[in-house]
Length: 131
Image 1: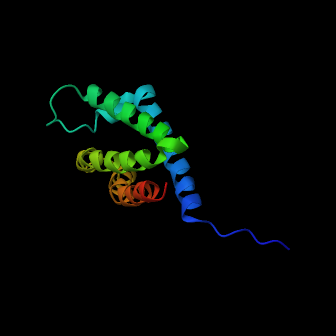
Image 2: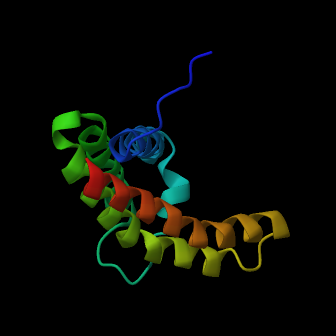
């Protein structure tokens, strides 16, 4: 019976890069395919149109996904992903605020997004350190 080799930090970082890249590809694409829900959570205090921020964040997500998925740019992609996840946190807080009087499943989803940023940032930093 053969035993699999233990996973190295580089293997683990590569797997994290693929997971984050896939997540960001999907999210980035939906910013263009279904922009209205994203428009609705852009903080009103930001200057300009909400659609601009929806599209800009979609471009950032797609570009970051490309950086994560290409081995030569994976390290940069890990740092870019961490910065991206931190930068969209205000929109997630705004979403929780705006959805406070929505039906409870929507409120729970909005609130649950907030702590989920932590493991995403942690994984992005893992890729940055280990790629």
